Each structure stands twice: as C-alpha cells, then as structure tokens.
Amino acid sequence: MHVNDSRQISYRILDASANRAAEGIRTIEEFVRFGLDDSQAAAVAKELRHELAAALSRLNRAELLAARDTDGDVGTTLQTAAEYSRTEIADVITAAAERVQQSLRVLEEYGKTIDVEFARQIESLRYRAYTHHRQIELHAIASSRSRRLADAVLYLLIDCGRSEAEFVETIRSLSDAGVDVFQLRDKQASDRQLYERAKCGAVIAKGCDALFIVNDRADIASSAGADGVHVGQDELPAGMARRVVGSERLVGVSTHDIDQVHQAIAGGADYIGCGPTFPSTTKSFDAHAGTAFLKQVHEETRQTPRPAFAIGGINQQNLDQVTACGFHRIAVTAAINDAEDPAAAARALRRQLLG
Ligand SMILES: Cc1ncc(COP(=O)(O)OP(=O)(O)O)c(N)n1
Ligand SMILES: Cc1ncsc1CCOP(=O)(O)O
Ligand SMILES: [Mg+2]
Image 1 (spheres, helix red, strand yellow):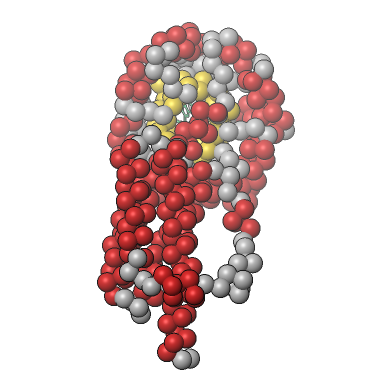
Image 2 (cartoon, protein in one colour; image 1 turned 90 degrees about the vertical axis):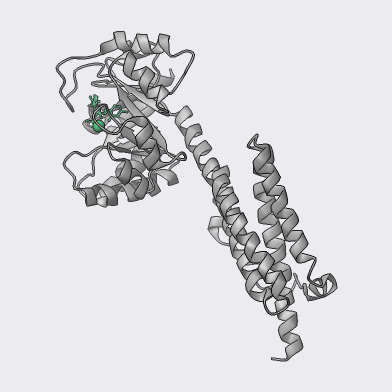
C-alpha cells in the first residue's frame, strides 16, 4: 500500500465516521429539544455538535470530500434486521448513542494518523458525549416505562415455571392475550434462579412490549435488567428501593390502608398495589382491606394520581365489584395461572376491564 493511499483511506474513513457521528448527535439533540423540555440538556447537546464541527475544521475539507466515494462503499447495502426493528424512542436513542460512541472512537483512532490534536479533541468529546447521552438514554428509557405503565390494566404474578422454555412461553402467550405487566414472584426459588429467570423475562417481555417487574428484590431487579421492583410493607421502603434500582426503573409498593398509600406516593412509588381485596388462594390473610379500601383510594388520590392495581382474589366473577370502585387495573395470580385456558382467561379479564 502506498503512503498516499493510506492517507486517502484514513480520510475516507474519517469522512464517513464524521457524518455518522454528526447524524447520531443530531438524532439525540432532536429528542432533547422536542421530547424533553430541558433547556440545560438542550444546550449541552448543541455544544457537543459544535465541538465536533470545531474538531473537524482541523481536517482538510477538500481532502475529506475528495476521499468520499459513497457509490463505491460496499457497506451501504449491508443492513441488519435490527435497523428496522425499533419501535420505541428509547431504542432510537440507544442506537444513536452507540453510533456516536463508535464513530467518535473511529475518528480518534484514524485521526491520530493525520493530526494528533484532532484525535485529542475527539477523545475529550467522546467522554463528554458518553456522559450526556447516557443521561438522555436513561431518561428515554424511564419515559418509555412510565408510558407502558400508564397504559397497563392487566398485571400478572408468575413464578419461575418448570423450565426456562415454559417461562418464556408463558410470557409470550399471555402478553399476546393482553397481559401488560409480569411480576416474577417465587418465594421458593433461590437467588440464582430468580436472577436467571429475571434476566430472561426482562428480555422476553421487552420483545413483547410488556413490563417485567421483580417481587421483593431490588438488587435482582437491577442486576437482571428488569423494568422495576415491587416491594411490600416488609421490604425496603420505596425511597430505598429507588436508590437501588435507579430513577429509570419502576418502583411499585403494596398498600393495605390509606396511610400506606400516602406514604408510598410520598416515597416516590410509580404505582401501588391495593389489597387484599377478596380472600385469595395464593396468599392467606387474617383481614381483607376489601372494596371499601379501593373506593377510598380512588377518592383520596385524585390530586396525586398513580396507577393503582387492585389485588387479592380477583377473578371474572367478582371483577365488576372492583370496577364499580373506580379501579380499572388489577393484579392477579390464580385467575389466569390456574385457569384451564390461561390465555382465554386473560382475554376475558382484559375485555371486562376495558369494557
Ligand atoms: C402488584 C402487587 N401488589 C401487591 C403485592 C403484594 O406484595 P407484598 O405485600 O410484599 O406480598 P408478597 O407478594 O411479597 O407476598 C404484589 N406482590 N404485587
Ligand atoms: C401476593 C398478594 N398480595 C396480596 S393478594 C396476593 C395474591 C394475589 O394472587 P391471587 O390473584 O391469586 O389472589
Ligand atoms: Mg413482598
């Protein structure tokens, strides 16, 4: 390879990577500008774009343009299915952030062969972009989870199942039948088993556009990449669970009386479980909060609305009593899992809730 060829190759790579970095930075900037009402983040996004332009101005533009050969680029026809599988803004942001990091790294490495100061400027930009984009990405992921939670009406508690294959099939088929949120609740499973199932469930649920929550264990929810954790009155308080799982994940709290509801909301719960409503075959209780509690929650949280799921012994026969209290969200176990046809039961409950 001739020296001039090598310079031309570097320039060709720099030109392509500069365009890719600029496109990625702009993609994220548009979300910051039009999706988040955050003027500070918008100012940083704009600065990053200008920093890239300033660093690129050190390169010879004529040489960059001369090296460009889009028609001869064998990579333009190579597209993966993943490029067309984005369904959420959060996925667009993640992909753009990855593209920026990769292309800045390429600019830095090949830039060293042309101008060391250029490579230094790009390196510093890469670190700044990483920090900024990470925050935006977490914000986009949190918004996507909140949106899915706001739309959720049917929440199902599931155990680890007999095998991973069965567990996967349960999530896929019941999500298809209308379950919006899955909670992994298995009091018999080991930590390792919970962690493995949670990791798998989070991925499968995401693919089905469902949420995946881990019962009791904020540590497992976070390390397994779940959408959130559900804590009761005997587990970590909501604020502490939040510290473990981070602001991008959901925290749900069980409540049995109105004081607990106010505390959960004040503690930053994203949603509440309210019950037990009726006697349950899944968990036994000495006393039941009943439908009177549901009515009270409905009336007393008008100023601080949070998605509230009625739980405990709810089934197709008594669901009307729940909806009569103003509750159109439920969390169930037996009504679906113990049904002869769980998918049909899920469909029927959903129809009743939306009816
Ligand atoms: C959605 C939802 N609501 C309430 C509960 C009950 O949680 P908790 O009181 O902590 O009891 P256990 O589930 O841990 O036995 C829940 N799991 N989900
Ligand atoms: C875990 C839990 N917490 C209150 S009721 C309940 C059990 C819910 O299951 P089911 O719908 O079978 O009563
Ligand atoms: Mg619990």
